[in-house]
Each structure stands twice: as C-alpha cells, then as structure tokens.
Length: 112
Length: 112
Image (cartoon, rainbow over all chains, first blue to last red; front, side, top):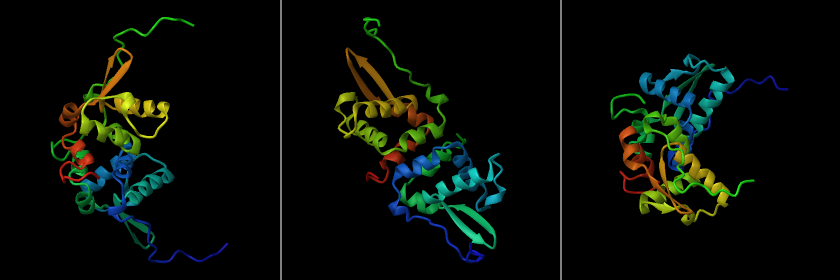
C-alpha cells in the first residue's frame, strides 16, 4: 500500500461532447436521482458535491455524478478536497440543440 | 391448455401521456435499438412490427417495442394477426414540447 496522496490537480474523465451518442445522454438523464441533480445544477449553477440533498447514500450519489460526468452532462472541478459540479450547458446545447430545455421543461415554463 | 384464440380486438396497455414521467420517456429512448425503431417510425409512419430490420431476435425486438409502448411513445394497432406500430408524436409533443425533435435532431437538420 502506498501512502502517496492524490495529485492536487487530479482530473476526472470528461468526454468530448462530439463523441457522446444521444442515447448515452438520454439514458443518463432518464433516472429520477440524476435528473434531480441536473435540475439543481440548472437552477443554482455550480454546486459542491456534498450539498446535494437527495436522500441518497454517498456512494449512490457518487455513482450518479459519475454517470452524468461520463455522459458529458457535467463538468467537475477539484479544489483541495472538494469537488464542484456544473452543467456543460453550452456544449450540450451545441451538440443537441433544444434537448436540455425540453427535458427540463424550460420552454413551457413548468417543470415536468 | 386452452385452444381459445386471442380476442380479435385485444388491446395492449398504453399509458395516458399525462401520467408518464419524463425519465420514463428518456430511458425508453436512451437505447440504440429503441431509438432506431423510433427513427424508422418518424421517417415512415406506421409500420408492421415484422418489418423492422434491426438484426435483433424476435423476442428482443418485442421487448423493445413493449418498452416504447409502455413509455407512451408508440401506439400499437392490431389487425388480424399483425401488429402495426406508430409514434404518438402529437401527444408526446403536447406533453414534452420539443423533446422528440431534439432527440431526433430534426431542428438542426441532421440525424444524431
């Protein structure tokens, strides 16, 4: 076992949106917990991972955040021992125009 | 075992779109085979179940068609021993405006 700490500027895998199939985005969004996270990020902007109050175990929350990140939906910024998550809104909009707004019900002005 | 045939006008379960959560629609669409079916229905209109050439076993195809139907995405019409499937386009559009067009890439004029 090594006692080496993680590098300060560890980066987490985030795909190029051009390489993300629409089915990957849809299946990532097609889950109640993950869509709740996306709604909070849409409403609040960047959030510290620990501040999502979803009634989930930490490991479950981490799993959902990983699915969102690997589907190109979120960006994760590491600062010290904290992780901050935000939506990759502009990139999603360029790749799949109208999708995020339709999913979040932005157009019709009511949340689904 | 009974030799009774199925009733001529057997109806398959199709939900009221008002009762279908957006996550159910998204996870139904978030699969390559199911999205391929939806693209064919979008392009061709109503199709007989047996005419989808997806390289799938019949049971697998039936499973995917059931997921789409139960998510409110397709309507199934039974005629004799055949089943005809179509998109519930107008109902989906009313419930989730812009979603289907965004998923199919209709707005940007290119398929995803």
